[in-house]
Length: 84
Image 1 (cartoon, one colour):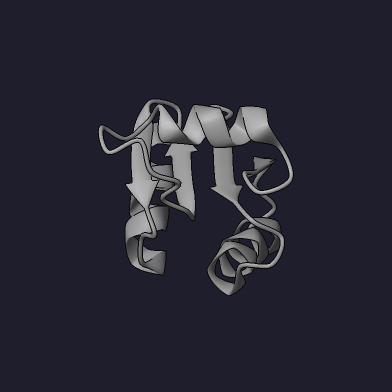
Image 2 (image 1 turned 90 degrees about the horizontal axis):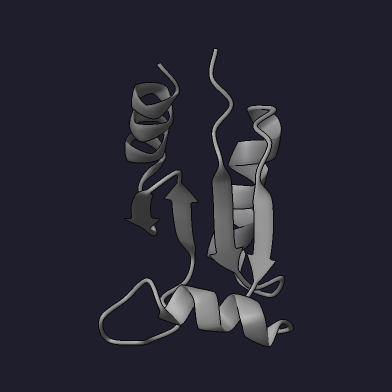
């Protein structure tokens, strides 16, 4: 099984961000949490992912695949697809 490079861009105070943290933790997936409110570099990196230059969070990056606020099924579909 291939290890995935998963980044979760969000905020500690965002319920949707915490939802994704819970899903990833429950699935025992290793990920990097990128707090875009308390860390300006993380915010800059997230803004660079969008042409609008907005802080669109939560956003998940799985390798090169960007997912903006995906449903649970869509998230795990991409995780399964990209790790095989």
